Amino acid sequence: IMSLIPARSSWPLQLLLLSALVVGCGSDGNLHQSSALHLRAVRTLSRIRGGRQACSPPQGSSEVEGPQLPPAAAPAPSEEEESSEDAEERDSGESDVRLEEDADSKDSYVSSSMDKDEDKDEDEDKDEGKVKDEDEVKEVEVGWDEDEDKGKKRGRKTRKASNAARFIARVERTMGVNATAEEQEYETQSTSAEGISLSEEEVNAEEDAEEEGSGVNFEEVLEQAKQGDKYAQFELAEIFSSGEHCKKDKNMSMFWLRTAAEHGHVDAQLQLATRLARKKATGNQTEATHWYLQAAERGVASAQHNVAGRLFQGIGCSKNATKAIEYYKRAASRGITKAQLMLATIYEEGEVVDQDIPRAVKYYQKAADAGDERGEASLGVLLIQGSHGLKQDAEEGLALLHSAANKGFEQAYYHLSIIYEEGETFGVKTDQRKAFETCRQAALSKHVLAQHRLACMYLEGFNVKKDVKEAIRWFKRAAKKGSYEAAQELHRLYSEGKEIAKSKKDAQHWKQVMKRTPTS
Image (cartoon, rainbow, N blue to C red; front, top):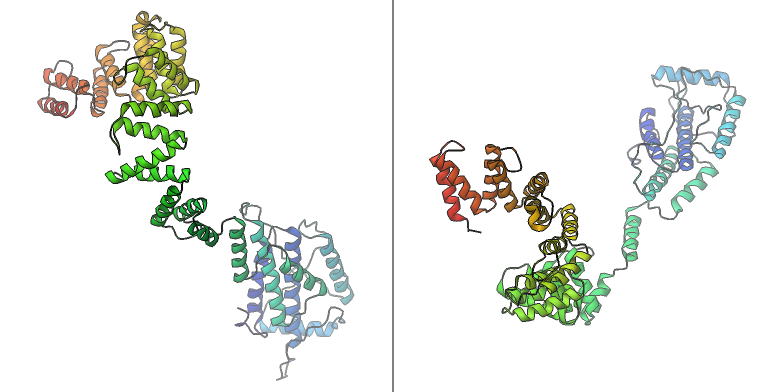
């Protein structure tokens, strides 16, 4: 911009150029710096105006001299010169903008040092005998925008102030305006302050310094990884995976992750197994089981649980229930609640091993003590039933079921519905209202058995007022979720036409659904 605007450019162009300075000054969060830059921009405008008047040729003269601005202590022009200049400005059609600092104003943006400069300027104006017309004076203020984003970094605000100071200096040099010693000192301080960036090279250097401060040197990590450092290899795998310090590369990430795993890095072994387990290929599953086993033997509880599940189901290896239970026990002893629940289920059902309810209660209790809602619900049911030699405790059982239900476990709501409906069978007072409410809560939580049970309540008017339309709605929900009984009931209702209008089309549809749905 400066190269395109000559020193003798017209006043509107000069004003347009300096208006950018006002914007730059007003965007800084430091009130003292903002006020100083603003005042400096104002003074520059005034000096440029004075220079333009000084270089304007007198009427009838053909010679044009360069801008010669008087020094700060230069004597004031005579009244005749002033009137001649005013007449010249009116003849040229250009507006005369003069800047006045109000001595009585309590502007919070101007510091005490700036107030002294304003008083000095007012004294000079009085000595020169200038009379300021209110119609000709325009007060320029640059204020801090309180609505500006408070989240911007202070470094950016400081850069704006510094760039504005440099911009003002360039205008002064181009237009022939000499800055005061105080302003030159401020420019030096603002451009040399710590954390300020005034050029693209400095910005890049600052970013490089921040990257170095993050503690990651990619070249150094790469060199260490090549030399066989398993920790550097694992770190390099994460770097390639995230793409934080280099281009993202999944293949390179897998390469270094496998390399670290082969060197015995346990976290690399576990992470590699997890990545491979997500892939459906048989070879990947076999390798995943291998690395889970390696981590499990190093004492990683989550890996022990995964190995148990793979041995139990035969994923990436042959089925081996006995080995699976061993790994489940190791994981359960390390506090893995899923392993505790699995062992409790195995001992409760007695299909893989002999049924052992006391042992099942033991593992359910561990999961419940850890706050697991499934452990609470299962233990609560066993305590309410009191079967297989277990002492019945309906009160404790209900408390555990309600605790699990309050955590959003839909199975607990379903159990509570049955218990409140049958009541005395479980040593609990019958409550039909609670039976309906808990069943409806489970149905709303998409529990299929509860949806079918709720539909039957509406159809028969049991625990609730009979509502065939609502019953059909819940039967359809349950059938779509895989309930064979719900699809069978819909086929019967549409075929008979007693509760609802007979419809061969709908009856045939639900018959087809029954064929596709396995019986429960």
